[in-house]
Image (cartoon, rainbow, N blue to C red; front, top):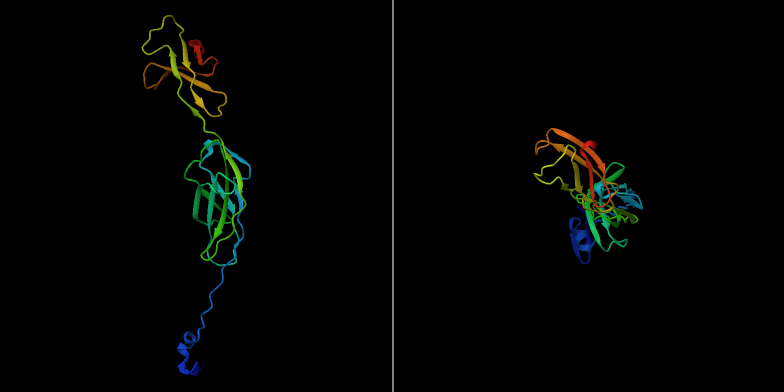
Amino acid sequence: MKRFLCGTAVISLLVAASACGTKNPVGGSSTLTVPKGVTPANGASIKYTDQPITFTVQNAVTTGSAALTYTFEVASDEAFNTKVVTKDNVATGTGQTSIRLDVALLGGKGYFWRAKANDASSTGPYSSAISFSVGAAIVLNAPQPEWPGLNESVAGTWPTFIINNATRSGPVGTIYYRFEVADNTGFGLLTASATLQEQSGGMTGGIYTLF
């Protein structure tokens, strides 16, 4: 074993590094590129019923060897001051990485999303904010029978079946009603059936011969 002077004391090589203040080198951090947003595309309009939404990025590139994970964020503002969803530690996929939300976003609103890559020693930059919107929810309530009423006797051969049009909310289109007639409450065997387009005036109906 070699011996040398450190200060004024004679010490062995085994403790020289500690005594003279030398440290082992530490490995540097890796460099991560920006993941590219794929879907939803910028300006996408998503139907409320098409939720939950899946977000996809083209994978980032790293100079390191550690496996990457991703962070996805959704916010109601472009500055991401009001985040509505944050998903961390999303495992990297092959070529692209995706995450499907486990909740539905509120309808009738605009949103922004972005993502970044991470490894054990580094965090990459966020992708550019991508805007998208979610359409308003459509709610159709059950139509209410108007005539014949419950247990009502109908004179004549051809009764007219009338319902009060269903109340609704959201951007509904043309509404159609399915009428069914049966001799039991289970409607296992139909006597007659028909589909009618909604009529104006708050009610829709047709005579039995339409069935």
